Structures are given as structure tokens and as C-alpha cells.
Amino acid sequence: MTTWSPSELAGVDGADELDIATRRADGTLRTARVWVVRHGDELYVRSVNGRDAAHRRKYGRYPGPIARITAEAARQTTLRLDPA
Image 1 (tube, rainbow, N blue to C red):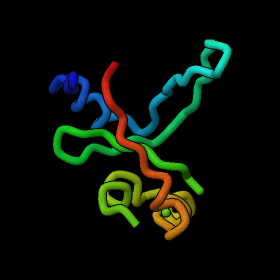
Image 2: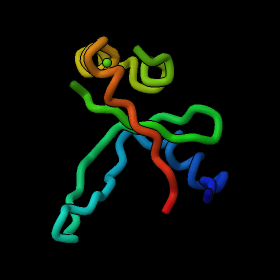
Image 3: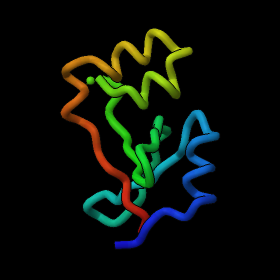
Image 4: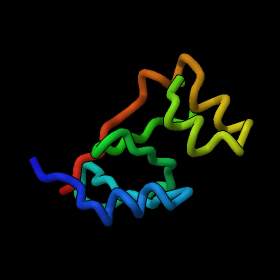
């Protein structure tokens, strides 16, 4: 498995939002703006619509969105991001 470089990890630490792209079934790209947090050398993203200390540390200054992203329902939407 490929790992994130130190500069990529630092970039995520310093960014409020990231734009990511996923592929649709037909191969075209769909982009989304997401909040990403770092845990060690791994990166995680979750749907804004479930409890995670990293999200509270990084985004706690946004009380409305952080309440939704740390709610029980969103915990199960957490995805680890792997470099391509």
C-alpha cells in the first residue's frame, strides 16, 4: 500500500476543506468538498450527516456542523482515504 507523504499529511492538517474526486460508473469524475482529519499517518473523511475526537479538535470552531458530523448516525459513514 502506498502511504501519504509528510508534506501531504501536513497539507491536510493545515486545510479546512479539501476537494476530492470520485469516479462514477461511467468513468466521469464527481467532485466534492469535504472535511478531512488525520489520525497518525492515516486520513479519514465522513458524511456530515456521526463521535470523533479528531473532528472536534480540528473543526470545533464550527458548532453546528461539528454537532452533525459527530452524531451517532454519522459514525458509521467514516471512510479511510488511501493515496492512489
